[in-house]
Image (cartoon, rainbow, N blue to C red; front, side):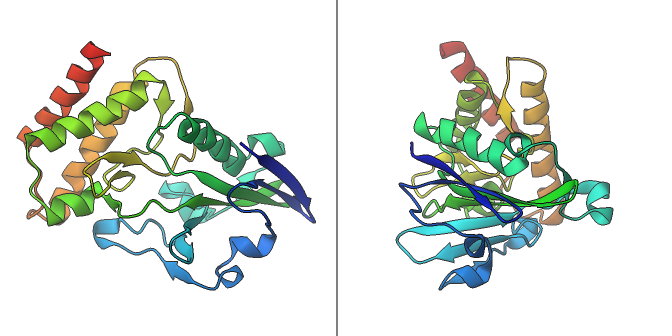
Length: 243
């Protein structure tokens, strides 16, 4: 790991020199790349319009601007209270992703993160390495009718994260993603952290369950029924017993 922190005029950038050997504030804007493409998707899978693919194949990146969600997000779109560089959302997420990726967990490898301080507040961005061929679970079950083995594998993958104490603050059908081999990945670790086992594990599963129900409500043709959730839980608890 080649972590480097560079101070900027009004903030700082944390980056991995092995991935991006030169960094500047411009890299955190679409104009800083030869190619920039806004991420869009069906059923809300494009996020809040704050995520872009940047750079050129084969080494392409994902640039995400931190945006607030929920009711607060309607009032305060993208600013956070500053309480020190190490406590900023992008630095915390970057270091968590770096630890997980270094342990071969299926998460994006972090490339760079920055905060821009404005008085007692800051805005933030993160750049990760794009994972080729992954699609949101919401899209996967629209394009495919997965079998029991698939749902078992999704549950087992989530349990693998939980077994190592990985808390994902927003596990939904968009942040759970599937690659071309049918393997499960997790994206967007804003507010994620490592925790001791506890009720949060079941709360995380509940959040995913509600998300799946919500998108089926948006499009009943999606291939997800109550039996599929039972299959996912079977995979989760079987993996838990064998770990």
